[in-house]
Amino acid sequence: MQELLRVSPVADEIARRFQDAGHRLSLVGGSVRDALLGRLGNDLDFTTDARPQQILKLVKGWADAVWDVGIAFGTVGARKDTPEGSFLIEITTYRSEAYDRSSRKPEVSYGDSIEQDLVRRDFTVNAMAVDLPGRGFVDPHRGLDDLEARVLRTPATPEESFSDDPLRMMRAARFAAQLDFEPAPEVVAAMTAMAERISIVSAERVQAELNKLLLAEHPVKGLRLLVDTGLADFVLPELPALRLESDEHHRHKDVYEHSLTVLEQAIALETEGPDLVLRLAALLHDIGKPRTRRFESDGRVSFHHHEVVGAKMTRKRMRELKYSNELINEVSRLVELHLRFHGYGGGEWTDSAVRRYVTDAGPMLERLHKLTRSDCTTRNKRKAAALARTYDSLEERISTLQAQEELDAIRPALDGNEIMQLLGLRPGPAVGRAYKHLLELRLEHGPMEHEAAVAALHEWWAGQPKD
Image 1 (tube, helix red, strand yellow):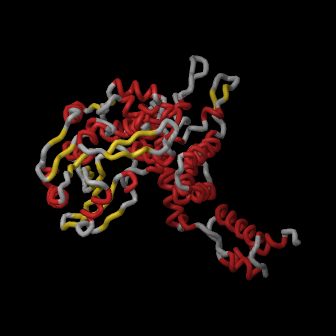
Image 2 (image 1 turned 60 degrees about the vertical axis):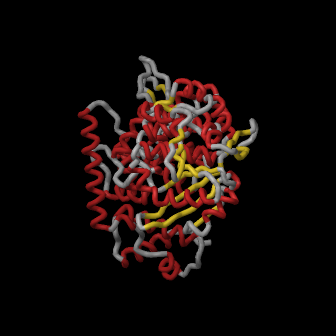
Image 3 (image 1 turned 30 degrees about the vertical axis):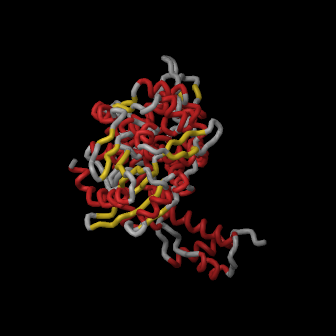
């Protein structure tokens, strides 16, 4: 009630507009669930018997902004600004939707009752409504009982629900991760039997659900559900592939369990809220291991260059899931670099090697610090402590060099314009080669005085073949 009272000025005001026009309006779905859990934000979902064009007419002149990008699916969006903050509102006409067996898009048909609308929703905890402005509670599928029991059930049979929209199977995993709820046995059984059906859902929708799962409070719980039901075989097959078999002779870490532990440890190191780039990199950092596994003659198992192979696999999977190029580049770079630290040994790196580590990581350096620290999952406390101390040493050296050399903005003493002027060149490949040579000197020897850089440039140029 406290949560509902907080939003009631906005909710009741818009409800009266609909009531005066002869329509019914109810707070619904996640908004009711979150209100009952004491976590309702300023995003409010409503459902109504009014048709989309009628909704538009009723919110225009009341809302501070209106958008109709979802109107084809019966949804109108709006923003209402108040002294207490802005509210983002979605109002959807009662509806039912189902997938054609071969289609990626739901077919939308409108309904005439809230009971008809609620039965087509994904889970009973999202199939509750509060009539406004009168506050009548509508719960035909005992969602309140399931909320108290922390169980995910479907209003209709799971088979009907998941057939209508297969993405609901991924939502089950997402809500398990977000709310720490347990899917009912019949829900798990249907997910397992119908996992292949997720293939008809667009990559963009799958990606959106996967992101929400990964950014949730308990992502490992949701990921385990995806793997155990077989859904991951279709949306993220690299993850179940990490469950490498092992025997007494060829002993090695369980890479699947290791990856989930690394994810949890990376989350514990986050300082500014959930970080999708870090979490994806932690989850995917070892996906190259199955393809690079070798059984050596001495009984050891090796995974040579799995970081390089894993970076390529990460790019491929993220492209198929329609991630942005920027995100793909960031995550795959972290996967590629996650083993670099292990060449540091006991601190044998030269200053130039430290500079290269920082330069190669670029803006990903802080995330690389966290990923590298998270990648230690040994149960040997002495070994774990030694690794932590060694990485502390590396970070201290980086900080010292940064203070001395402004390492974050590392660049040669001469820029491209100066190179062209000194060598009498026009823009072209030779200028790039000269710049790269000066950058190598900078990385190897640290900052150079301007005169020394000019001399080094001329010395290099004298040894270059002239066309």
